[in-house]
Length: 159
Image (cartoon, rainbow, N blue to C red; front, side, top):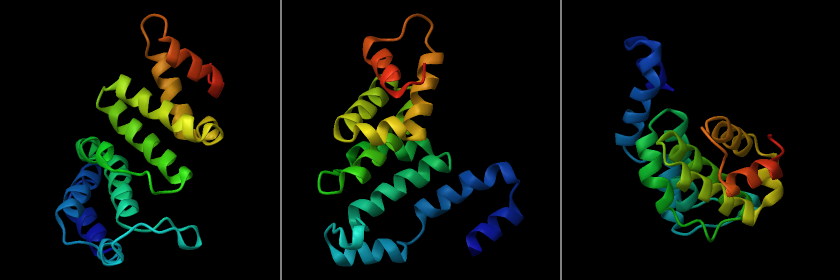
């Protein structure tokens, strides 16, 4: 909270997100990261999916949300989510797809969405992020979309 107030008062509004992301990335480990490291393994007690992997996933999502796409692109694909619940793995793939798309790596982004759909088709079909990404990709095509993209758009009913 103190970081937010300091950044908001000392920098123009348009730059505080980037400054905050940089500051958070370089700061000492948070209490959450410290607790996850002490736990040492991923667990799903009371459906929390808490552990080092989930903390890493949140770092990626936060970086992407704050506009630090390079961090999300660098860290996101490296995270092994196989031990997490399907819903968490799927959401992470969508976040990575968003970062890859923002980095103009559409084929990699589409592959992440398709992988997520193979795990949890209902979640992908109803998730705003998947729908937004696919609609943006379809609208951005100069010609006909690829068969994989066209089929996915049809399944998501965005066209």
